[in-house]
Every structure is written in C-alpha cells, then in structure tokens.
Length: 77
Length: 247
Image (cartoon, rainbow over all chains, first blue to last red; front, side, top):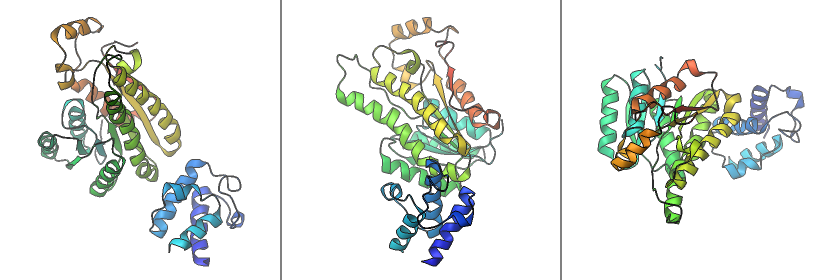
C-alpha cells in the first residue's frame, strides 16, 4: 500500500507540479491539486504505464482522488 | 519542408488524394503507414513506392468506422514506428442521392465513415501524441462542407461536421502541443470525380474561379505544409484548396 501511494505521489508531483505535502488520500485531482480534465486523463495514462495495467474509460471516470487511484491499483494487483 | 524522422498514418491511402498525400509525406522524409479498406493490391503498390524512396512503410487494413479496428491499427502503427507524429484523416466514401430519395443506410454509411471515422482515428492517436507532447492531425474536409452541394446531403453534413470536429479537437489538444487543421479540397480529379457525367463536370468547372479541376498533388502539397515545422503556429484552421470556389 505504502509503495503504491509513494509511486502515485511521485507521478502526481511530476505531472501537476504540486508539493508532496499537498498530497493525501482525500485530495481531489481537480479541486485540490489544480488539475484540469486533460491533466487527469494524462495522469491515468501515466499510472497505466507505471503499474503496467489498462484502466478502462469507465473506471478512469471514477478516479477523482489520490485515494481512488491507490485503491484502484491495489484492487488490480 | 523536412519531415525526416517523422512518422505518419494516412487513412484511405491506396488511391486518390490519400495516395498522393502518403507519397508526398514520404517524399519529404516521413515514414508512412498506408491504411486501406478494400484494395490491398493498390495499397501495397503505394507502400512499395514509399519503400523505394528509402522510407519505412507498411499497409494496414481497417474500416475506420469500426472502433476496435481503429485502435488496433493505431497500436500497430506505433509498434512498427515507435511513435506517431502525423495523422491524416483522409478516408471517405460517397453515397449520393437527393434528400427525398436518400435511404437511411446511405446517410448512416457516409456519416459513419466520413465523420465518425475521423473522430475514432483522432481519439485513438491522441493518447500517443499527448505522451509525445507533439502531433499533427490533418483532416480532409471538402468545399461542399463549406458551401453545400445538391445531391450530397450526407457527404456535405459529414464534411461540415469534420470542420467542427477539427476546431473542437484543436482547442482540446493545443495545450499538449498537438495541432489539428482541416483541408477543404474543391473538385479534384480522382476516381470519385471521374464518376460524374461529362455534363455535370462542365457545369462544375464553370463554378471554379481558377477554371480547372484540381490535382491530387495540390492537396498533397497543402498536407505536407500543415505537417511541417513551418505550420507549427497554425491550428483549428480550414485551408481551402479549391481553385477559389469558397471565399
């Protein structure tokens, strides 16, 4: 779990240019981390690469917080 | 114009305008995937010609109105070339008829290939181009999408739709370094216009300020320009290559 969160955090920091301290499981990509819709799509694409999985469009739509992403990845691994 | 090191996918590239564009891009140095729907032999000839120029090329069969097939085509192109810089949405069909007589099927077929097909191909390449943070999408619309044409309600609607789609995708993708433009050819001498009766052709030419049908090379040159570095600040535009029909 910690490992997944760490890797997800690193991607979010790189992609969105936010501080690591802003990131917690409840943080919303759009509202809290300043991402626009395309940023979220790109984040999901990078998560797919990082964790070597395919995230369907339907599933991607439900990933709106850092916690959603971590939970989703853990459920697939 | 130098396209060396760039890779392209041209839909409907076995003949007509698509073929001319594929060869022109290769002539400027690009590797080109040649998409075709039905005519494998013709597509192969185009790919052979490109390889003879010292560029990489392969043929890929795909009905662009089929979402899964389009995704597979783009996947294969990226697998073969390693990246994808240029998409030319050229493939198109006609099912001409007067509105009163037009069958639902004729309407649906043309919209599915000429409009939905452009959407599906654009959607499929977006992932790769967003990752690259660069890309060029060139949609082949038509002068009739700007000024209308009797007997082509379906084709005209689809081609006008392509112009709207071009502008929407240009706005969505601009921040990712991807430009999207349309070319609106006028009446170009191809198999598609060869089918017109001589009388209709005469009448057509009367509407063209420059007084002749266009050549596929005219469209290919415009496409090569829009794919080149020289066009990097152009997006969401419709370039008419029509002898002045629409001004």
